[in-house]
Image (cartoon, rainbow, N blue to C red):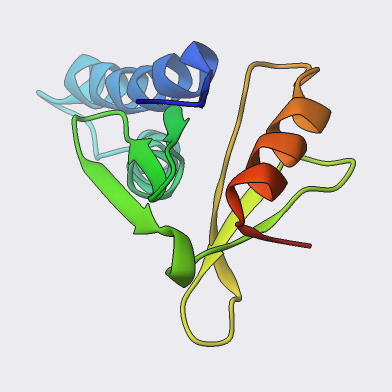
Length: 128
């Protein structure tokens, strides 16, 4: 059972839109011109967003479940994650030095940041 659900459809649409726009530019110029650096840049930025920015997350008693734009999912167990909740976007930090993290975006304005913090503290997550 999910105790907190956050999502940003904008992140999902933006990542897929950048990839689609880059492919559109490549195919528009394809028959005769060289491949544009702008188009490749759009595709690379979109691919990076698809890889590292979850568009949907759920907080459970046992951890945080992340959904990414192309259907990839990742579960972060409670004991392996530290969540940084500050005035910016909350970030789920993973790894040995807790330097790599996944942003937990909840819309454009992220008004429910205090609620997320209280749910995480109540469940016993490591919150900084």
